[in-house]
Length: 187
Image (cartoon, rainbow, N blue to C red; front, side, top):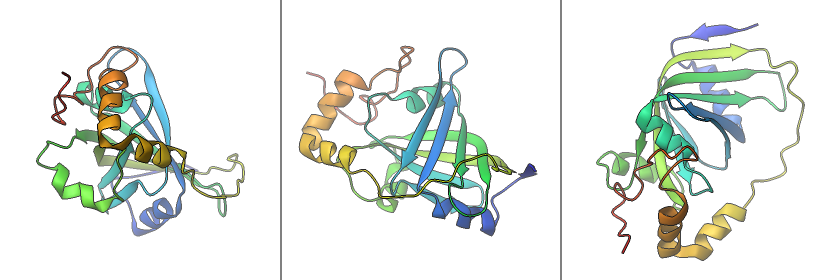
């Protein structure tokens, strides 16, 4: 059944790299808990205690606001094919925006996208595995291109207008710092 580790093993890293879908959970001290599915070519294992993932523009910006208030983050990976396994990484995360010094260190790890909003860096303190024997089998067909196509159609200016209109605060009203830390002018 469940096991705990202080870092990712080579076997854990190989499992993570094979997954087409993962989940991100964050929460501030109060308000809503956020749980978001992520996919595509958006996650990199940096080392045994560090994961970076690219956050694309979406309807909400909960993870950014939560991490600014409370850096706890959990990532979860499930085997939908092959041997059953659930793997969770627990740690503290930082959110990087385009004007942050560390942005340049990570941005080239990911495919370029007009929709790239932030990069999150999770410093892992615990890895937990569990059996996953009740997770159903699913067949992977392909990634969805809808978000990438929408971002491409919007262009850089359209995406920034969207950030100003829809991504400055969480659903609970917490600031995401997207305008301040990307240099967008709101005039």
